[in-house]
Amino acid sequence: MTWSIAVGGASGLVGRALQSHVSESHPDVRWIRLVRDRSQTGPDAISWSPQSSEIDRDALEGVHAVINLAGEPIGPARWSAERMRRIRESRIRGTELLARTIATLDRPPNVFIHASAVGFYGDTGDAVVDEGSPCGEGFLATVCKDWEQASNAAERAGVRVVRLRLGHVLSADGGLLGAMETPFKLGLGGRFGSGRQFWSWIAMPDLVGIILEAVHDEKMRGVINAVTPHPVRNRDFAKRYASALGRPAVLPAPAPALKLVFGSLQAREMLLFGQRVRPRVLQELGFDFRYPELDETLLAIVGGGLQPRGMQEA
Image 1 (cartoon, rainbow, N blue to C red):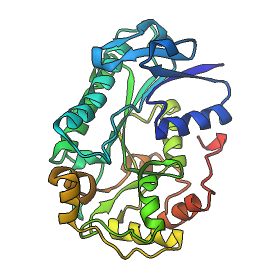
Image 2 (image 1 turned 90 degrees about the vertical axis):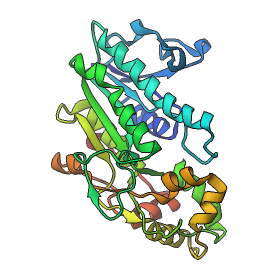
Image 3 (image 1 turned 180 degrees about the horizontal axis):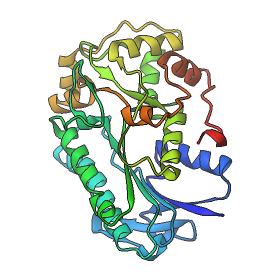
C-alpha cells in the first residue's frame, strides 16, 4: 500500500539525503514537500508559512507521517539580535504550526517527527548525559527546550511524537565537514579552543535510518538522542579528520580569536561548548549503527564510500 511523508525542510542537508534514500529504496512512498512559495504547490507540495501561521490543512489529511527538519542555520554567519530571533522562531513557529494543525485533522498522521539538537544539554563538560538529563543553560539550550515543547499539541491529541536531538551530522554533501574541508585540506585546521569539549556526532546514513525507523516503529516516541555511542573530544576530531585527508592538524583556533570573530556568545555555544551524549533510547531499542566509529566514518566520507542504508536496514 502506498503511503506518504510530508516534510518541512526538505531542501536542507538532512532532507535531501532522506528524500534520496526514500526515492531509491522505497519507490512506493509518496514524498510531499512543505513549501513557502505558493507557485510551487501541487500534488507533491503543500503550501505553508510558519511566519504567518498559514498552512494547507486539508492537504495533510491522511498523510502517514509528518517530519519537520526546517530551521535557520546557526552558522557560520555572526549572530545579530535579528539572526538569533530567526534561529529561534524558524524552529518553534514551524513545529508549533504543524503540531496545532495535526491536532485538528480528522485523519492525523501516525507519527510527527521533528528535529531538535544536543544543544539542549548546554555545556556538559566530561559528564555523560542521556534523554533523561535536564536542560542546560544558554541560548541554544533554551531554543531546543522550547522547540521540543512546540510539538505538545500533537502529542496531546494522541499522535505519536518523536523529538530527535541531533548531534553533528557528518556527510560528504556539506554541513560541518563542508565548512571544515577547505582549511583542513590546506593544512590550516586544528582544535577549537582547548579542544577538550566533546562532540557528539552521527553519520548521515545512520540518521536517515533513525528517521525511517521512527516512521514505522511504535516504540520510538518522545526524546531520542540521534548520535553515535562514541562521542570524541574536539581535538581528537580535528586530528582524525586531518589524518583522513592526509594533512596535519597543527593550527588551533584559540578561544579569544573565535570570540573576536563570532562574538563571545556564538563562539562559546557553537564552538567551545561540548556535549558528551549517550543515545540510551536507541541502544535500548537495539538500533544497529552502520557507522559507529569516527575513523571509519571520516575515511568513508573522504574516500566517497559512505554508503546509504539498504531497504532492509531502514
